[in-house]
Amino acid sequence: MCVKEVLVQNQVGLHARPATFFIQKANEYKSSIWVEKEERRVNAKSLLGVLSLGIVGGTTIHIIADGPDEEEAVNSLVDLVKSGFAE
Image (cartoon, rainbow, N blue to C red; front, top):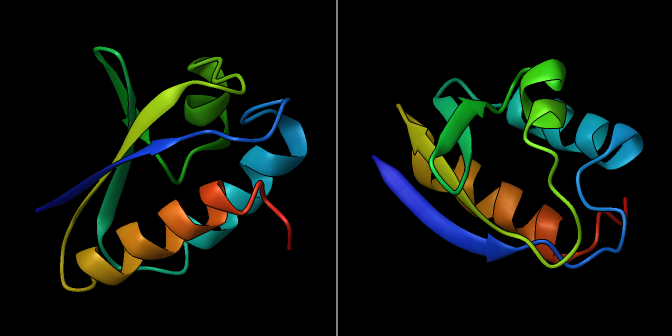
């Protein structure tokens, strides 16, 4: 299992468009991936799950993956969040 903490830098957080980019990236990996905010953990491959966390800019989240490509998945998603979702 691989876990990394990241600060959401963009002002709108993980809403609509950024969340879509996030789950599309998460779905590229075979590993099970979750996003955790405070004590709530949701499937990172689920748009409704990610949106339900209400992640705004300045929030610290944990990205957790478990599976054959867990490290690559977590690193890629952390990089995406750090980039401010610039695609």
